[in-house]
Length: 340
Image 1 (cartoon, rainbow, N blue to C red):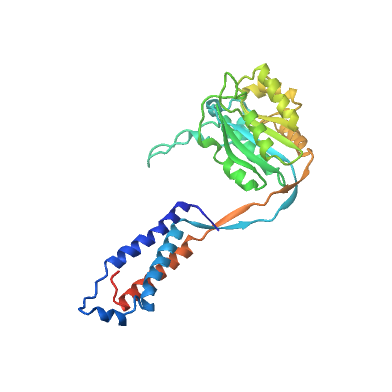
Image 2: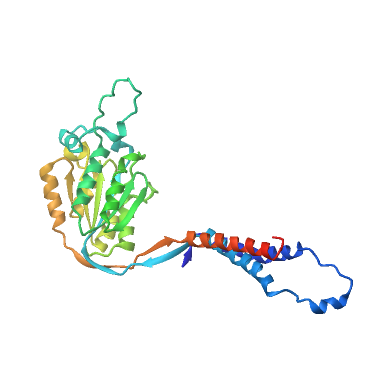
């Protein structure tokens, strides 16, 4: 058993001074003959019951406040899997409405970022065109749906990288997190950081670090979902390429926005091609199908997942025990006519 708030256990030590004060408050017995002490016991056996109940009730209350947790250790599991990290761009440019008809059709519907509340009787606002982040969210959901048996992590990034969820084979969690991608609009974009010009952690370096610490599968893949509007210096390209090749990390890009559909040679496209990866323009059904098929063909490897520990909060058991002991304490104190 472990405790979520172990400092509350220190309060149990207060039982000693409280018992001392309790004894000091008890009424004294007056008599004139010292010899009568020979016939008095220092404290009858029943007199110990109330103090004992007091200590037990106070201790049980302190344990309940410390929030005891009962650990449950799951057995090791062996699975055939690949490791994927999906890094989604949430910079300000990702809230730009889509101009490419294919991408707009792919994103579909009204932009979640553009919805507004209207008062009763007011005319309904005109539907907002879908944005790049809407297309990114749908692309991520579609990609994760095809990853059965794989482990997936989800990052968000703008000028820094934010870890939404680490590598897991529970894809429902990743899908739930993907539903929140269009809830927070970030600032600028930082692909290459940390570097002299960009001190924040970029998604490429963040993925390298996460794979190094938690990656287990032979196949490690970084999927970047972005509009590609940032630069990567030649020096950082060399450094990042060396680190990714050392770990065997592959790079693919799910591209949203004009820079990917127009064929513009942005730095991230150049880096992806250097890494032997491919750019999959979101909304191009043929290219998306071909790109997904190529990813699906990547080799799976045997991975043994470590034991996972979950905890059950059992504070209510000690709280109930404390209430029962307090009731017995007050009842006992009344029976032996002691002052509480």
